[in-house]
Image 1 (cartoon, rainbow, N blue to C red):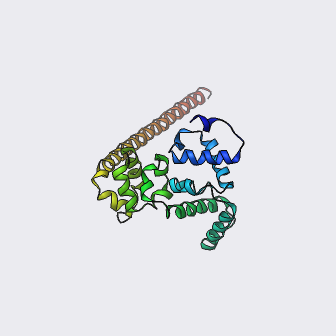
Image 2 (image 1 turned 180 degrees about the vertical axis):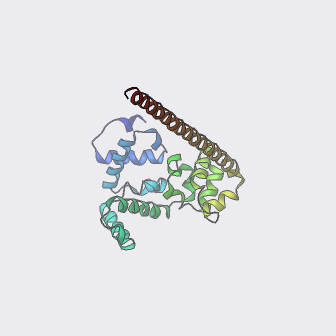
Image 3 (image 1 turned 45 degrees about the horizontal axis):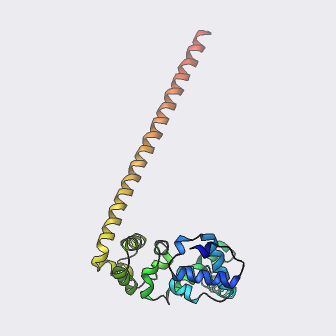
Length: 225
């Protein structure tokens, strides 16, 4: 996208470009640092409504100071043990911001979510059966695979899991994820066994070397008597 890659200092133009990139589903094809900067301009211009309609996972990035302050107070009230821990408070605030945005996220926009959004746990846990059904009909197999992988640890009664398990469109994705999990587990076991064998070999070689040194020392001591 040529005009997005052309540097401009005009905040209004930058905000408009951020909106256009999101609207045209091009966020994965542009410079992420520049997009983040332009999203901040969209926030400053109060032009984030349409962005969040398409990308609720951007909610934390475009959260204005007053809303962030409000959410921080809510987090500390609900979890006083986090007081003073800025990092954990930010995580909770970001989660709440995305959750709030997801409440307004229409199922008709689900197929516009890129893979990165479907890998965001805060997005996935807030999807409804309607979102999942929409992705079954209008999404790609890659999107369904991403959702199946992200949702694999959710309980069976969760709306996302219920919708996937009852939809033939997701069966291939679920089976592929299960197969990949088996492969990854096998690789992990193999790697663990190899690491164990390597460690045992190193210990054995170390003991053999110590025994050899001990015998040499004994031989030297015997020769000096």
